[in-house]
Length: 98
Image 1 (tube, rainbow, N blue to C red):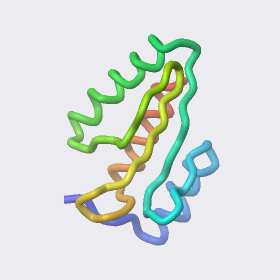
Image 2: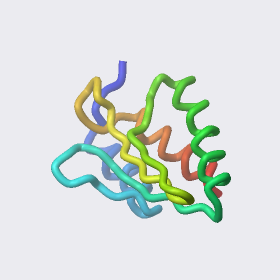
Image 3: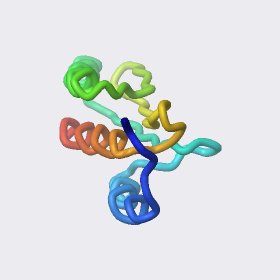
């Protein structure tokens, strides 16, 4: 079962993601990111690749897609906040978006 990030994890791995463009969500223990692609097809393809990891890890993002943009929010509902699963999925999203 997932656990909330520790203070140390927030200062290290979470801080790293915040430096890479992720942002804290107001009024929630969650992070968000907007990914922009050249085309709808690229955005949808990226979402499909991310979905494979999300399903494998049983950790699913809150997201929406309009044309070439995908808005993402990550939080772990089971623990009502950020967990290592969010960090893992955010890093994979960044990697797949390169």
